[in-house]
Amino acid sequence: MSLAITNPPTLHDPLPFGYSHIARVTSGELVLIAGQYASGLDGHVTSPDFAEQVATSLANLGEALTAAGLNYGDVAQIRTFVVDHNRDKLAVIAEAVKRIWGNRPPTQTLIGVAALALPDMLFEVDATAVRS
Image 1 (cartoon, rainbow, N blue to C red):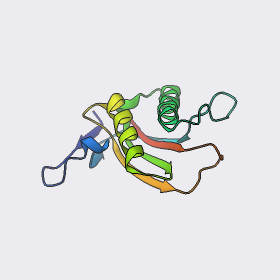
Image 2: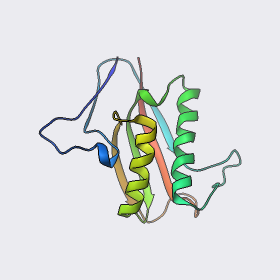
Image 3: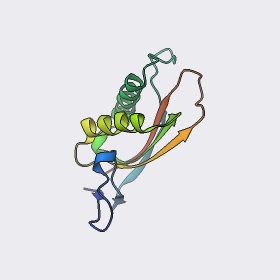
Image 4: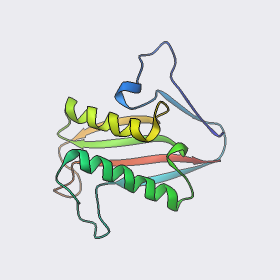
């Protein structure tokens, strides 16, 4: 495999927070996925609910990965952007990441923001994936 994800025992356990400490690309091609949000085919936000936006955004990420000939297991890093971030929202994101990646989540940087591109957007995720 061209992607190695690890968590050194000398650092805290990041799994409950929905990320890993290190993703090492050992070979292959990097594929960059633009920010995905809870959009329908018309580009409008599909729900005002934060948890639903997270789920739809990650599903849209999956669609983009599939279109690139990849899957969630090929993702080395995600960056999540959260409007008015708080601990409850972190728990929602961590649970969604665990549903998709289990105990092998990609690295993640969560960025709290005042607003995103559209007024109804509460969450956005982009990704760096590796094609073997």
